[in-house]
Length: 640
Image (tube, rainbow, N blue to C red; front, side, top):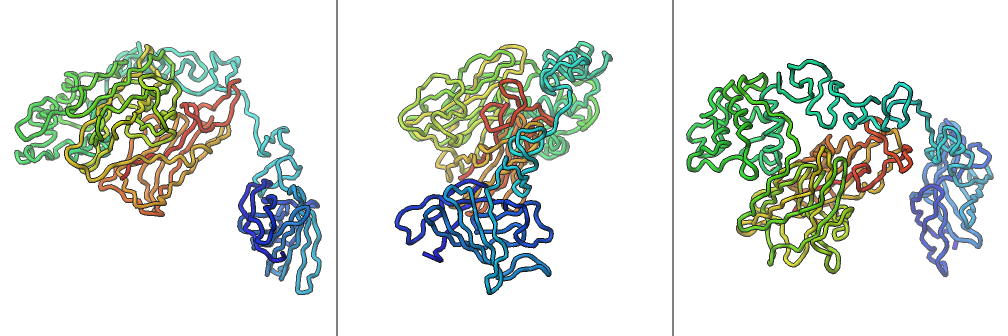
């Protein structure tokens, strides 16, 4: 049996993994050993420069190496009565003038992998260089194995934790959950505006917006943008900034309108809206032929934007804005006209512009049913202030035959973290018409299956496919209405969402699917009071995938989500976990076989975000979970 080859399978240090059974073995054999084995007397086996702090023999998928000077080399091994024999050979070990040539290792490993006894020979005469005994490297073995990531011994002693990593005591501070003599309160976090800010009780004028306050500028001036009653006045606020925040961003800069997929070549997202409007010729062919500009400084009546918002349009100039959803209020229309009348500047205050303050909680307006399409309504439970809930309601699909959808439209009561539609893929049928709390992502019927469509944290959203592309809803199935709400208001709110499914006119060229890459999210484990970048990697292992958009999903302690193409081009980055948005590809991006998306999430567990705490209130690791207090890192894409 001498000389029979084996494949060593990579394993965590000290663990057991199956090797291949020798070709001439009569029956399957026990698993051999893998990982680093530390030399018991601590002296280097090979003269190395520099020599390692702790020498060892390392078994891995590639073969065998000796830390003090022998690189990875193939190994042959075979079973014996009480364990394994192993052989390896190196042409050269060590370096410089102390290099050794023709080095051979003969070793025996016990059946339980706890002992490795070896002999090193050198030269053609097989001169004995060293006989040694080694044992698996483990936290708690009394040896600090820095090459395996250890920094201290013994574990759970002093500043040495259970993984043999250093921990450092943290002095008393605001946010540790203990009321100290100079603190009015300490709720165990550093979140402002939650009833305890910088360990002081809330008050108007403390510079932090608390529940019930529209603003708090930290002064006692009653004639600025925030009154002494902590109510917004808009004094001194640039009119265009106010319109961007109160009108364009929440109502217009959506992916299906004038956001990522810029309809009519009009981008109304922050940072782009002003340049897209002022003195820019209208994109509509009829309006362009008439010489109309979107915004004519000083003349609202001549501005195509104002005409679209007021519905004062000639034949061929399209429909009024917004195309669907609730029309803008008279106050918002007056503010836009006043801004144009004052010269449509990017900065400055329009004299007669009304103030558009932050809105209190207002239930969403119901959507009218779509012509030729279908409407689904989630009429969910009521949440009290501070309450959070996610759940799922399964309903039969409304279409009697297969139905191609060109556009999804959503109207959502405020308070959403997300809303999604899922296809039921389990055997049998779900219980329908019943709201199931804690059925996260409709897991009961779509265990991590891709969502059909959905909306981010927004009161109104449209998911519109480019021309020639549709989503197919098959007849006879079930759709899960999945909503995640958190009540940040001072009054009860209801989980309620209207979903419109619009028909595709004609036959679509392509039917889209949803990608949700979960390969990295389950392994998230971030120690308390640290930040950590968590990496993901999605490889196309099949036929070309044509993407029309990508996005990322993370939770409250997520600081950043970034996606790159195979060539290193950054295609998406988001710093707001609650408003992930998306990056659209126009034209669509083709991910060829063996090409990939790299992505990463930066998470913060107690550095700038509150530390995760266990049921006893103690700081703990941040791991994967389904609430916003837990962590997720999921790549999302729409492709065909």
